[in-house]
Amino acid sequence: MKTVAANRLIQAMQKPTFYDHSVEQVELIETHISWVFLAGDFAYKVKKPVAFGFLDFSTLAKRHHYCLEEVRLNRRFAPQLYLDVKKIGGDPACIEMDGSPALDYAIRMRRFEQKDQLDRVLADGRLSVQMLVRFASMIASFHRTSPVAEAEQSYGAPQSIIGPALENFSQIRPLLPSLELRQLTVLEKWSCKSCDDLYAFMRQRKTNGFIRECHGDVHLANMAWIDDEPILFDCIEFNDNLRWIDVINDIAFLVMDLDDRGQTKLGWHFLNRYLQESGDYEGLRLLRFYKVYRAMVRAKVTCMRLAQAGLSDAERKYDLSLYHSYLDLASSYTAKPSKRLIITHGLSGSGKSTFVRELAASCGAIHLQSDRERKRMYGHAATADSHSPPGGGIYSAQANAATYERLEQLASIALAAGYPVIVDATFLKTTQRDLLRRLAADLHLPLIIIDFIAPEAELRHRIQQRAIEGVDSSDANAGVLNYQLTEQQPLDENEQRQAITVCPETTLAEVAASLSALVNGE
Image 1 (cartoon, rainbow, N blue to C red):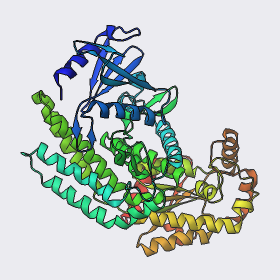
Image 2 (cartoon, rainbow, N blue to C red; image 1 turned 180 degrees about the horizontal axis):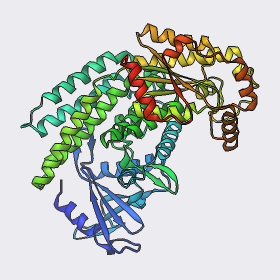
Image 3 (cartoon, rainbow, N blue to C red; image 1 turned 180 degrees about the vertical axis):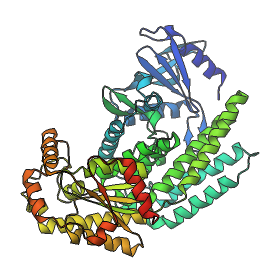
Image 4 (tube, helix red, strand yellow; image 1 turned 90 degrees about the vertical axis):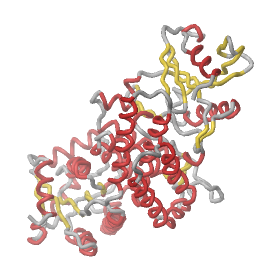
């Protein structure tokens, strides 16, 4: 939407001489709600004079307010990028920076290389698991310290959640009146039913403090990898209800974005690390609902582009295809995958966690780690040494029983939410395995065991190396391994029938094939 005044502002800000610092050329980037001018070492973001159902930038006062809010809120994530708000004013025929009276406002940001933006990093083949794991840890840490919505506030109430979700559908229909809308209607009904089914749980989430002041727009184009550090930017400032949300809603956007880009495995790496850091496995009950919601937000934004004048036939064809792809993605989330319950078995140092981390991401399963859950239960940081002796401290018989009971509870939660689960623990005692076997029997599932074996010399070498690196959640040392070797109870004959043996040479593909064979009774 461009007015005469907007056209004059755009023309002025595209001139290098407009700025009070060195600028050789200016690059304009346009979105459906803003213009961004890349000028020298800085970027200047101007909000369009638009009003949609979810935002209102229609007046100068509102645009000024939301510019100030954008700087304030984004400094929570990227204080090094968000600098200040600049006034743009003067005579409309001669617009200048800091001119009076004010004609508009621009957010001034420190510019970074666009190649460092995560969507570009992915396109260049440089996006790694390690990067996304760092983002997961950073976002989980941010969520832990974010302000919590108060009981009297409407944020996070079921009616505040279903409102934006249904708004996506009501706003799409008039934009594409000539299209077949059957799939849209099915998704709308699914969203309504899901919200009805989850109504009480959504209220409970708010009571339990999971509605927080989040980022609200976490996807690859709003993330950057700068100086070997994860950076979030461009959070939602224009709508409080879209920012004060369930923390699971916040991360659902990135998981959906990675799925959309064909990077489902990376999405699972991110999700599992986020859950391991946050411990918020209860939130899995809402994840599908929010992934559908996020896909529909993308579909709506695509429709808004289609409604803009001046699109070429090629651009219109591309956006229509994109719209349908988002509907297809949303539809895929409405089908629950097959449930599986898998546990590991093996001594410390046998490679369980490293292998399962990749296996869970490859087959789309929740990865529960005993070391992390044990440390969480007893108030230790994941990588902190508890200084517990073998068989004592947080590894006493009582602590072990409590840890495995907690793992069984978390597995039950994740399975009830419709997700396959891999429980990563030593499971050296028959009673520990029986606990999960009973859960599997109650759910009419087979209990599959991945049995890790390695030469004792290799176990000792790995444990020693892990201690040197100091980044693992396991407390295992040589004394712990000696204790395990004397206390372990091998798999019995029945357990071995449902077991897959993994030695140092076993590949992920071999285990995946064996899993499929066991599940399908081959």
